[in-house]
Amino acid sequence: MTIYERLGVRPVVNAAGTLTRLGGTMMCAEAVEAMQEVARSAVVIDELQEAASRVIARHTGAEAGLVTSGAFGALALAAGACIAGLDVRRMNRMPHYGYEQGCEIVICRHHRNSYDKAFEVAGARLVEVGLLDRALGVGVREVEPEEMEAAIGPRTVAFAYVAMQGVGPDLATVAHVAHHHAVPVIVDAANQVPPLENLTRFIAEGADLVAMSGGKAFRGPQSSGFLFGRRELVASALLQQVDMDVAPASWMPPKEFVEKPLNGVPRHGFGRGFKVGKEEIAGAVVALETFVSKEPEYQKQWANRCQRFAAALKGLDGVEVIVLPRETTGRLPLVELVLSPASKAAEVSRGLREGVPSIHLNERRLGEGRLTFNPAGLDDGQEDIVSSGVRRLLSH
Image (cartoon, rainbow, N blue to C red; front, side, top):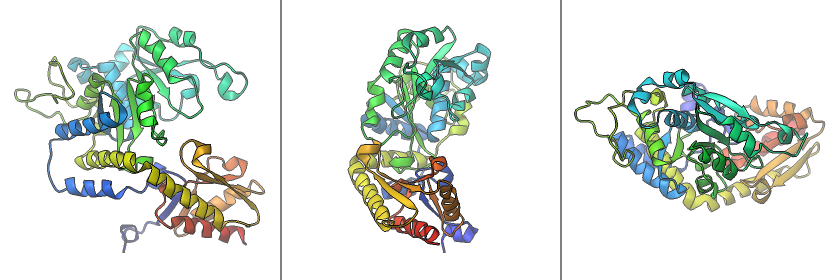
């Protein structure tokens, strides 16, 4: 009997992608093994984060890195680091220090999203810049450098940038403008790997801090994330996250993060609620290393699942099956189901979800009569369960 059966919870077949509400992805065996191993012993978390930093830095080109509680936690800690730096007095006042000082983070208007409240958690206020001409398709102009310049003022602590395929302005331009005013750039790249080259691209293009999920395609713990970038900013994030119930007389700051003496010993930081355990740290780091070495194998596995799923639906009335290879999506292969009439898509999606197991396809284009099959959250053979469910509903 599985744990889900014991608890009376329906099993799920997740062909919707690495969505947190569906439990994310299937963790790789290497990460599961690492988590089981460290769960049976104690460790100094600072030292484990130092070791994680070395691995993250090696694969990203950053000066330092940190395992966080998801990408949202990474963004909140990034904002806190940009506000407080390594000033212990500021850290101890967070997030109130940010509110009291009127700290601002500039963001392009068309980059606003439901996750950017992470910056507000740290005490920052978001300042929007630019118009939506290009995003809405009513014009060709992107957010211009002079508009970014005008938005940066004495209270600006960071420039936030959301990395999305095909969405401008380009990061190098944003970094050039921000750095001219000594303003760090925070990149939200939560779900931007694959492609593998994105691990290093954002740092190379001028990002000071980058936030990524540790689950999703990495196949690490879904509750984990990565924050990497400039050493002093990552150090501030760490010190505002870790357990600081320490004896000031004997405490020493993590030597691989903090290179200069601090003006005191921080207390528990505002990011204490974004803590990670030894299991998440080990699992995330091993998943990162495994992904780097096995990404071509993962891609082949995903492609095979897409081809098998599409072949099983060949000739089925009422649906057009479109295979989108990795070369088309720029990330990983997908399969689109175009249903006729368009209203049929919601009916099929609902029917799949209500069964046992509960089957989920991606509904991002539901209004267009399209459902998307994403192989990243599936286990071996589960594509057959999905195709059987679709055939059952469309054959009635």
